[in-house]
Length: 294
Image 1 (cartoon, rainbow, N blue to C red):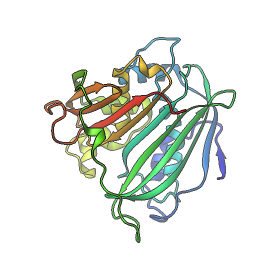
Image 2 (spheres, rainbow, N blue to C red):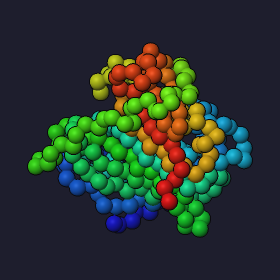
Image 3 (cartoon, one colour):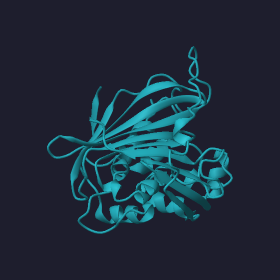
């Protein structure tokens, strides 16, 4: 795997511009490069705004939210997926799953060595899935954080492969003993624009209804990473600890909207506000949070 090193975060504007250009090819292998950014630091003001938008505790001196290294690595991920040799067009990709592991709390002023690469192309019942990996190491070179974001390129599965079965079952079930937390949240229309401003993710489907309609949405939809971060913030103070977070993104949250947050025993869901707990129908997301794997 070749290493491509950046001295400063890749600029998002050129990455978005390249993403709109026709692909040289579609399908085929993912690029084998590993994109790295040494000694990356969080901007304190942007980090504070991110905490506010996502509902994390704010204030100086505390650790950064466990989802924030994803934001720091986002320019690298965009630079990789916007390349002309990337086999899937960025417009239309769907973020369908996230696995995140934080080995210890990360200080807001820590410098991190970031790395991003792609792997794991495989058939999916709705097209082709692949993974984008992000990693963060501290000054000693110790890996303190990593994530795997699974994306779906909609369409026919690769020729000669059998589509994987549709996911189902366990993650959407009510835990034994029922839900302990049951809250209804209002999600304002500006949520997509506010999250875009602090994350850099300016996918048009999140910004305005008119921009979302060409992609098949009646209204703008919330970022999947905002919904994951908002759920993790609701589980505070666990978000500051070493943890593993697993999320499956199932159905978009339309903006504006109302959602129902359910949590118990390390499991959580985000459902439409009028959906009964444990009732029929897909949740917006299902997830678990727990201790890191050994």
